[in-house]
Length: 286
Image (cartoon, rainbow, N blue to C red; front, side, top):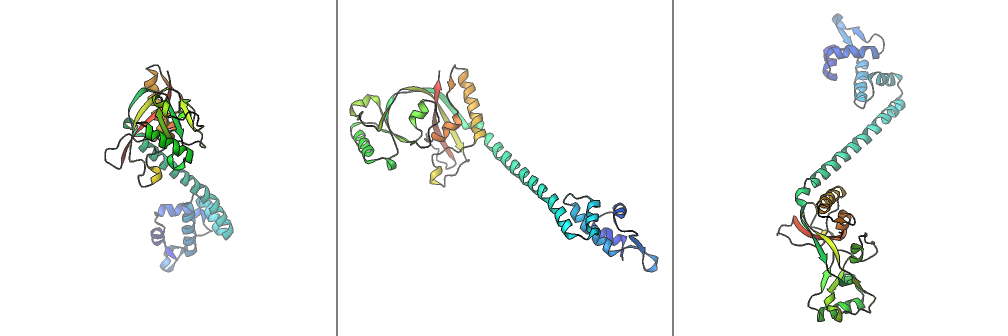
């Protein structure tokens, strides 16, 4: 036999709450102990403790006691599992959503200074040799050596696939996104018969100066010179640039945030590892 005071202390509830539990317990839960002291049966206290535990998982007091009194542990486990699993899944989803919102909120907060400047420019026509040096064939390497010998300025362009950019189309993942270019005024020194050499006509573009501060890691070689990708962030940048250009009678041919994946040429750095500047071209129709 346990006293009401002791029962309340164990359960952490008030005496009035105990009275609410009485109707869910076996008949005559109360009894008279020694000295005619009114007490509570110990087994009923265990029943309440178990029911209170189940209640923390969303099971009602009445359902908990019914399962306990039935003595069917299998039913209890089944009932508990059915209630706990959906709750755990909802909690996981809520946690993931909060984490995602916090991450996007932190990135979107950078937009006011992410886009530092932009201008509409004319990109002159030039010759373009696709492929980075490490992936170039022996013939391509020979062409580049010839260019470098004869031409004062041979530009390595690691930031985009020129043809795809000029046409406003997303570059194919199968095509190289880097290469060497040379101005057309040096056409006499370019092997125009080579199948590797492409002529790229002049086109208008919007040049963006984008500052990235602390949202990508410099530790990985793969990340160096690469814009971090976050779609909500770039959609916001796209809206800002599109609105500004529309006032000048221009429009973009394609999404900026898509092109940023292929436009990773650093303009300058201020000495801090956490800050990088990128000069990004995106095709433009006027």
